Length: 94
Image (cartoon, rainbow, N blue to C red; front, side, top):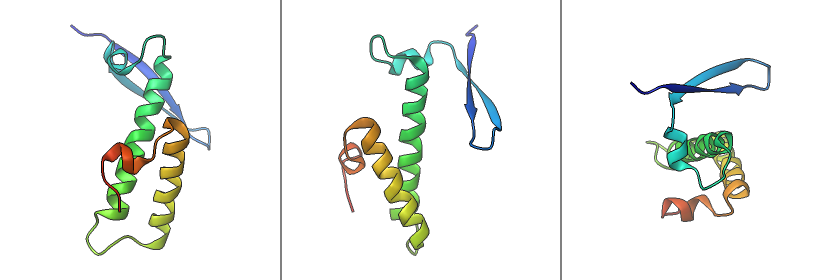
């Protein structure tokens, strides 16, 4: 039986949620010596960047301006964290 480990996400209003993951799963994505919490953070940033991209660029009828602005900011945050543009990481741009 695989054990789990818990990570806690805290929001700007002080609310929080515990996320359980299979123990050892985070280690699969970590580089040697990398903090597991940073790995979870990386995956959260990647997931939000990818989802924002989909909503902004692949939605029927196009995205409203506010969504485009959110996507642009998320792309900036992605690049700040990983040192690579999202378009390069995804292998395509718009």
